[in-house]
Amino acid sequence: EILGEPSPGSMCSLLLEFLRSSCGPYRCGTGVAVVALLVNLVFLLGQLYSLIAWDSAVENHMQEYRFATNRGRARQDWGICIADTLWQLPLTLLALFGLGARLSFAYSVAMMVLSLEVYWPIFAVAQRWGAGASVGELVLLLIFVSGLALLGIVGLAANRDDLHKPRAGYDPIAPPTT
Image (cartoon, rainbow, N blue to C red; front, side, top):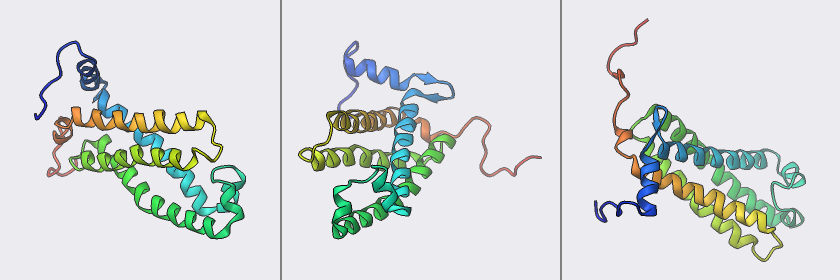
């Protein structure tokens, strides 16, 4: 450990104690990461909907209306939507599956997805700050989405050793029993 453990009774110590505590078969920190990944999945499904039916997504306010009037800008955003959806959606699903099955690669994949989930709300708020976005939308993006993702990263880091242990009774080499 580079920084060591936080001093007992401090806020960081209490947070780490919570994230390392058990919540059923998993630790609370892994559970927070799964919730953050599920929130990301909801946003990605919205992106997928925009990819399939762009005009309908604009009508349902899932995409910015101001981009609908400028078709060149709408095509640029549609291209960004393709990039986000085609590589982030499979990684999110892979991270959720891997964390559920406690597979060793899940830690790295979940960290990648959650780091993007910290970044994109900050970018979206910076883009919408002067464009008349509501304060509620900005708070939702910054505090809820980015904060939850950051807490998920800390939760995974606090429980990184658990993801490298196989489940009790699990033997990947043994043939399945019927």
